Image (tube, rainbow, N blue to C red; front, top):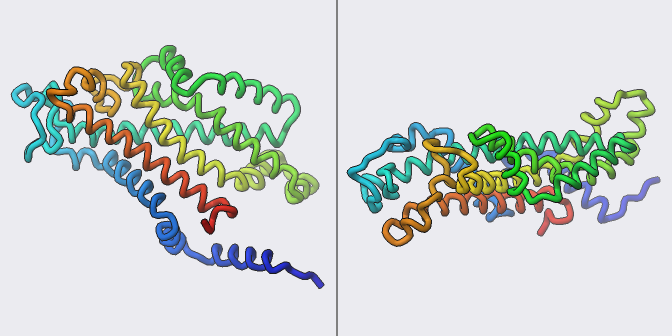
Length: 301
């Protein structure tokens, strides 16, 4: 007769309860337990919705110049004021959210998926493939994210697509290293050995048995990568190596306005800076809460 320890029985009961919960119940429980994480998720959803529905939300065309309303203070017509070319700042912020979400989710998603596949494959196959893969990761991770992105964008050029590529490349080794560490533990579990004994192919074992068991740290990394990618895009645009005029971008809105108009029209730099800070903070808060919710050791804290 098998005896189950009390702690094991409680853990099993908790797991069964979690499985019975629907998506709505799990979401409500997450909101109740993690208010800061919920706030971060709300910020990200607002920015995401602003980017999608920018054509209907923005009251003005973000590229239209009104030289009769240059550096106009916030009022009822221009709620966040205008910039040095008479363009409505609120409209440019809304369309800038589209650029930020496109670059943030695009670079984080592509870089994360590539790092996930390579990290799991490296842990599963081992040998010379793992050795070569790790040395390549060591070389790439020796460069800070923004420095490597600058090097890539200087080769491929500017533009939204090239910025996504430039930010994706530094994110791949960061995801691959963490995923490989989790996959090494999964590789030694009995069901992977059983799959090999049954004659399953490498592709099926990796995709059906290993990848699903490293999704938790992957999702946490993905949420952190979104904030890093948005910040990197703003930095590149501020330096003139990212998105170019007349495409609205938060970093581009900061370029030349922080110093030149700090006293005469401070709203030109304040509102884009706040948008960057809030979005990156929201991604960070949601990522921390997601980590606590997924990790069983931190779930009840």
